[in-house]
Image (tube, rainbow, N blue to C red; front, side):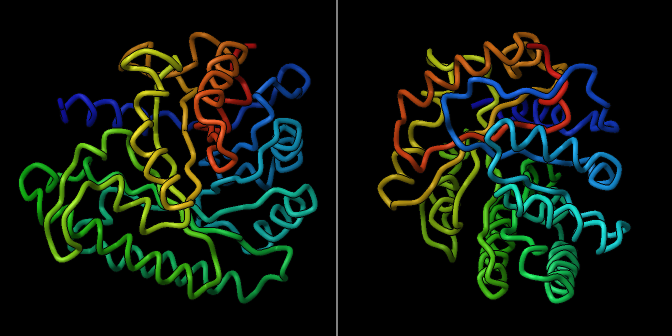
Length: 297
């Protein structure tokens, strides 16, 4: 496995979250195989300026969960208004945060700050204005210690995830994380036992989202094959698994994203993936809301 290739890919995908653009064409639903879908919303300020537009698109495209990046500079009331409207549409909002620095020596402080914010927000909000889940996107392989202090970095990652799982349960929230499709190739041997990181993540969380960023369903480098181990393991535990795909422009390679092919091709490929994994607990997530809303038909 070429880890450096995956690191470059991940760095590219973290770039370019600009302001959400106003749609130039009517919002419409696409043929996404009738599968409930999740999406990431990184541009948090847009919930104040384009909240209705975002939720209309989400409602028309069978979105059931939005992973909403927590921005502590945005007032509680802005979140309350948005989440209330989402609740009325049957859409769950999960508090999203995390970065590679969470596995550094200061990682526990970042985690504590995030969970304190969520806890305080939940106390201030009514039932229909509250987050229903926690979603972490840490990506420890982008931290310098992944190469120089691999075992310590993996352990730090597991400690953060384990603590987050416990804290989420205390808050009464579901807990999900993002992992790359190749975590099933990463072995660990420490206080958590022995195994691969993908299985450990699936076992430790309420659900896991696999970043299977490819623009084709079939083939050795297609989505179906890349997520096979994770889907099988999650099914053996009776746990949901979410297959994430990319719609933003990538500088890495055309095969990473559906940006070049457009929405119709993406949904045709997702239909093939769903045919391969018809289990109700296998669903999709689209990365990310901004690029999905403006992608070509």
